[in-house]
Amino acid sequence: MKKISLGLATAGMFVLGTASSAAMFQEEAQAAKGFSQVLKEQFIQGGPAFMGIVLLCLILGLAVAIERIIYLNMATTNTAKLRTEVEEALASGGVEAAKELCRNTKGPVASIFYQGLDRASEGVESAEKAVVAYGGVQMGQLEKNVSWLSLFIAIAPMLGFMGTVIGMIQAFQKIAAVGNLSASLIAGDIQVALLTTVFGLITAIILQIFYNYIIAKIDGIVNDMEDSSISLIDMLTAQSK
Image 1 (cartoon, rainbow, N blue to C red):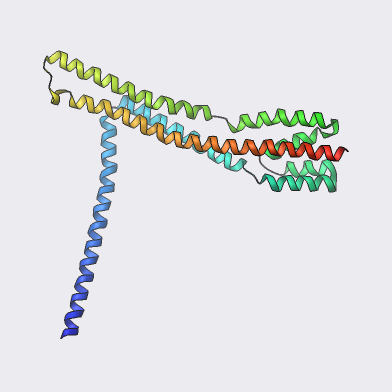
Image 2: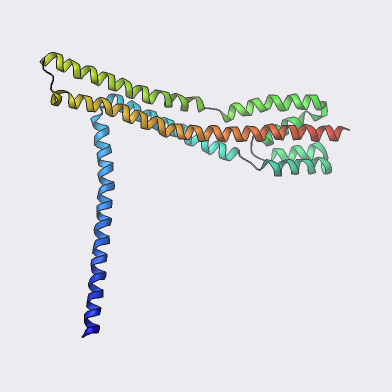
């Protein structure tokens, strides 16, 4: 009997634990659903005029950020390995072999190497000028559309503040028309006004994180380009002697 009672008690505790876990999971799901629903409602309450523009800034900014991240990741190469391979190609097959290697390698560093090697026959100074000039071109490609991202970061909170100011003006117009200061009268307008600021700041914060990551990625690639360019000139100088 004791064994049967102990087994029933254990089974009952297991059922209660399972039911408790299921209840907690359901509450968490409802809370998540409630947050998304509240966020949607708050967005709608902010008004379609300014909130729609803020949302457009977020969508366009994310599109630019994702495109830049994909491009920069594809432009990132193992520059140390490339320098070693170019040096070996120069030693074994000369400039033409090194050019062929760079032609078949992706990335801005390989492109800069190719331009420098292409002018190697005209002298080291000509190769250095070609490397510097094409390095500027590649830097422009890396920074393409980044200015749009910074523009969206600046515009989003400005639009939010503008919506807040307009909402406050409407609230004071109601006070002037009624002639009585009532919290319930202007609470809705003030809430809508503040919501535009909140969503504008959220948009700017999200885009700022992506912007800083992109800038850091560009700086890393540019540093690799500069170091690799110096290494290429040293290789060409050593070969010409």
